[in-house]
Image (cartoon, rainbow, N blue to C red; front, side, top):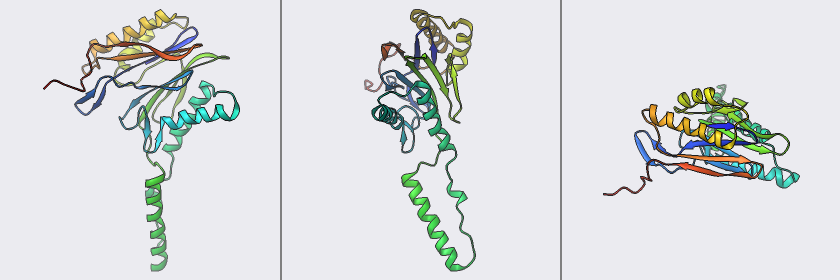
Length: 242
């Protein structure tokens, strides 16, 4: 979940790493530092969110391209530009050529053999080099720019991009979005925004049947992006007593 206040943006996420009915760990930080003044929170399939969008394309790819732009031009990408670049990567993955569309034309046995061989080589190349699958990931990108101030961008798995004042993904969004609608104000202070996030966390813990126990909260403002607080009700479960 994320909210924009007066001169800052706050992003919060649960810290549970799960697969099927198994909880592997509950201290997984799902909010990545994109650069000194940008945060990316991702939810989705474990292989697609956080460090990986999926396949060979990683959040690191976006992170390094943001750094490369600053290195080449001497100025950082704005939050809007970084969000549009990320959205472009997701949109491209939705529209890449599928193997099924590459079919040999049957004219002669020799032509069939050549076309079939080319198709097989293309499939092998694409499997090794090009990620052909859409990325099952939802993203909230928060940042602070000197000219426009704090902002929050919503990017979903089908590459929809919107600038929002508040947003949330996942099962917890069923409870947190309604709470935000009731209590959110655009002129909130940091303390008021944290109080709103805590209300959302309380609703999730109280009403969601598979509610995650722990959450991490991060903030970005004129002083940069950084950790703000952890809300923990259960300690790490990676090493259980036998």
